[in-house]
Amino acid sequence: DVKVTQSSRYLVKRTGEKVFLECVQDMDHENMFWYRQDPGLGLRLIYFSYDVKMKEKGDIPEGYSVSREKKERFSLILESASTNQTSMYLCASSLPGPSNTEAFFGQGTRLTVV
Amino acid sequence: GNSVTQMEGPVTLSEEAFLTINCTYTATGYPSLFWYVQYPGEGLQLLLKATKADDKGSNKGFEATYRKETTSFHLEKGSVQVSDSAVYFCALSERNYGQNFVFGPGTRLSVLP
Image (cartoon, rainbow over all chains, first blue to last red):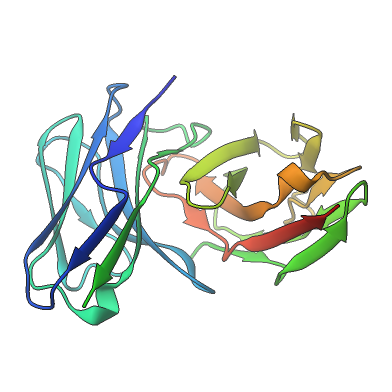
């Protein structure tokens, strides 16, 4: 089975801190994604990566950056955390097209910025 | 751009009731369609999928049929259980653009004993 593992289930950080969210997948998937999930808004794509060192902005990249130095690891970075970044963050991975391949999700990281 | 619309929740049903969660989509090409389920405190899990028109996806008693003429992919289950209580997300991924998935807002289902 594909496994996508996020490094933390719960995080509490202070405003202005630099925050790293880590995600590792074990199935050699080319594509990796970071979403944030907020009540009433569903999942919104922050960034995705289709190869090592490659990244593309999603719908809401402001305030975030990403790093993909190895194929299995995709990191989300909050350069200076703010309270409006309090959210559930979900990492996912998938094979490249055709589009009938599904995305596999990690268990989520609930981040609270105080 | 592509989008997915789901019926607003929450949906509250009694055990053994019939479930329908409506999903419609807008896409420029020929998307694959998915239903994901999220149990409390967890990430999303694939429930079922369909990759072309008239395909029926099914799993754990849930079914959905890809209707191109109505751009719909409604989720149904004949008899829900308390353990089906979760949030359900409809999603699409467009052919030849598999790097991205578009999700609906989610529908929360509560099943009462």
